[in-house]
Image 1: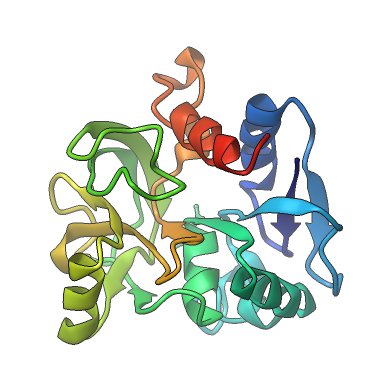
Image 2: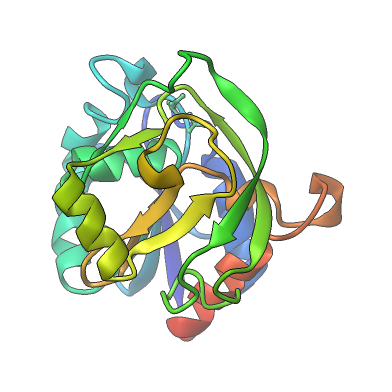
Length: 222
Ligand SMILES: NC(=O)CC[C@H](N)C(=O)O
């Protein structure tokens, strides 16, 4: 099973997520430059990493969403490719139309950089199957544009369809209904602001993130 990590100018969590994927699969992921137009054949999971793609100009993730490689990511996602977007990756996926809603400037206008408690709302997704629904985990957050917004109908739909994967245990950035991570209608695309890849070994202060990569990769036969 092969994995890939997309690298944009300004990505800075690409290496961390590559380490998490390699730890889970035993194989280093393909690092795919944003200007590429095709994903390597046989990819089961692609990660869209955190960072400050294009310096967060215009809106965080807006320019990266228009990178050549995102056409391939969109096409493959429609065919069931698992896509994991973390932090700036979540912003890119909303800007690319792969997930609903948008990530706005944090309430309070501060960059928030700390560990947060999250509730796993739905352990039935391919990304959260390593957890129990209702379980609390701790991941770090580091962002200024993490304030998730969507219209009330979309929020109700996300809740009703079990597409809220993670919720902040307490307000962090002003996100509607404390939403921290959501999945697509088909369940194969996840976007989340907290960083599971920064919590995969005891030296990180815990390894709550490890089960996300292990569980995800089991579903695609790694
Ligand atoms: N760590 C990150 O991915 C940062 C995300 C984003 N550029 C923000 O600050 O909102």
